Structure formats: structure tokens, C-alpha cells
Length: 438
Image (cartoon, rainbow, N blue to C red; front, side, top):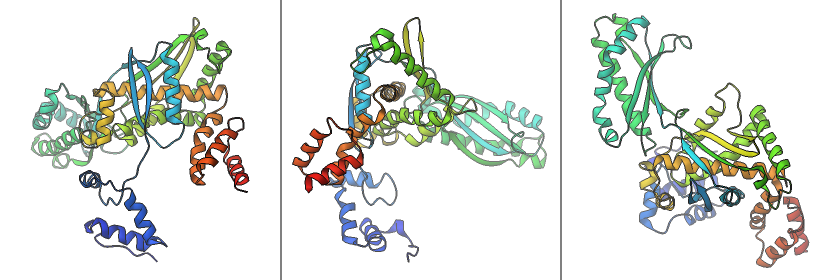
């Protein structure tokens, strides 16, 4: 029976591993070996990784892949992607090549506004609070000057600040709703620092505000925190071409393909069960680039899926239409990303990924990420409406199955030759490997 461990975070790395191995594993030495084999042999580099989070005992690797031939706004880009799903990089690359001969991807950053809120309880007259806020608004802004100074030099800072009465949702609940532009940084630390100063100023100024009663002076700040829902930090990515230009080796009738493609998108627009999987495919591309560039994919996921639900029903992030013989396919998604701060200047592969993207600004990275999502979505819908999704996916998954069964090089060659003309499934591959071995 496992018991609690005291002071685990204060143990040395070696001691942590010894405790884990001896407590949870039937063969402690094997567990230790697995954990240590993923340590970086460069001691300084490993120390850097150890300090990213607490209680680091090893590194967890994801494949770092490259998707070339993305023609974006007339310039070719090679996009880094960090992801474990077998078919994602191949699908994105295929879509990039397809659209590179049909005008490429067009992108537009629609807005870059980010949001933070001070949530507080006020037991008093709302009219008094409104008057207080209007009188003291400049004081709030001035109190953050030390924090915003450098951001303002880069052209960013606080855009607006408003008082919101949310008592219809919760008794006595109000908030300071603040919008920011954080330029090339994701801005979480900057925003949260500003908000915490606002909360401090709010309480201090309220205590000195003569019109407030004793009860009204006692404002209770519940929390001060940025929001990962950024519906006004928005980027659009799109492709278009004549329907006749959609012809390809797997598209014999471009008219039929285009009509079926648009219908598939419409289904995702109205059917939440389909929309979730549809958008997950978009996020395959989005998350892979977000991770590779050292950004917060959990924040991006949360914000994007909230945006997909903004009408009250979860719906497709992408859209398509045929108009005057032209096929249009596009998406608009909220992306709060950074190319400075955080891991961008620390993680060696993140630095390499950003250099590969030619040191993009925050807005340029928004464009690249949106394109990766659109490309991934196009590849998925194209497969679904033509050959089916499993043919390509399972062929890419074949290596995973072969690795699982520790196939020899001769077995690998034989399996790959056999499944050029046969449907790949886990059961079929296992059966064939067993037949070879027997």
C-alpha cells in the first residue's frame, strides 16, 4: 500500500526517481533506466529542462516534424510541427503542395485584443460604484505605469477599461473588464501583473472614497486573471480557386468534389457531434505549430472551442462555398500567441522553430498557425469525401504497429510490400506478421 511522501519537491532528482521506482514498479531498475535514457547528455541543456517545471524526473519527447511548401500571402514557408499523431504532418504537407499551385493561402489578422478581468464583490449602490469608477479610472491606469512602460514602447499596453455590472448573474458581482495589446508576447504575465495592480488600487481608492458607506468601502476582490477567451484576437486564413482547378489524381470530377466538400462543411456547421471531430482535425494542425513554437496549446484550445460555441451551439470553425464557379474555403479563429517571452528564448528547439519561420512577429505567427489548421482541415475533408480517412491514416500508422511488434528489417519490407495492395488494419498487420514468423 502506497503512503504519502513528505517533502518530495525537496528531494534530489536521483532520490525522486528512486522513490518512484521502488514504490510503483515491480522492476525498479527497468523504471530507472527508462526515465534516465531520455535525459539529455548535455548537462547544461538537461538542467535547463529540469527547471522548466517542478519535480522533473525525465524528458517526454514528441516528434518534431517539418511541413514544407506552404505558400502564404505569396511567400513560401516551411512550418515546424510537434505532434505524435502519425498522419498530421503528411496531411498538412499534402494540402500545402496542393494549394501552392492554386494561388496558395491568404491570411488576415482581424484584431489582436486580449482580455483580463478583476472579479470583485460590491455590497452597495451600483450608481455610486459607477461614479467612483469614472472618477478614478485615470488613477487605475496611472498606477500601472511602471508595469506598462516597456510594453508601451513596443506599441502595446492597455487599450480600454470598463466596469461591468454582473449582478444579474450573481449577487453583488462586478468586474473590471480590461483589454490589452501585448504585441509579440502572449502577454499572460504582463496582463496578470496589471490586473493585480488594478485590484490593489481598487481596494485602496475605495477605502478613501467619501461617498461610499463603510460597507461599500469594503470591496472584496475575488481574483484577478487574464481570460483565454479572446474573440477579438482573431485571424482569418483562406484558399480559393476555380472549381475546375480542383481536379487532381483523386478528384476526377471537381464539380462533384466541390459540392460534396461544401456539404461536409455544412454538416459540421449544424451537427455538434460532427463539429467536435471536425474542429479536432483543425486543432491537429494548430496545436502542432503552437507546441513547436513554445506557446500554450491548452490556452489556445480553450479559447478556440469557446469561440466555436459563441452562438449557443458548438459549430464548425471552417466554412466553404461555391460562388460564380469559384470554390472558397476559410476559417477564422482566435489565437493569443507570442514570439518573445516564455520558452521562446529558452527552449533550443523553440528557438530553432522560430528561426525556421524567419523570426515571425506575433501576428505573423497567428497567420502561420491558422494556415496549418486550415490545411489540416482541407486534407481531412478531402480524404473523407473521396478515398475515406482510414486508407491514408492507417498506412501512416503502419510503422507504429511494426515498432510495437519489434519487426525486423526483412519483416518490415515484406509487410510494407504486402499492404501496398491490401487494406491496413491493426488486426490484418498482426495476422500477417504472425504468418511471416510461422
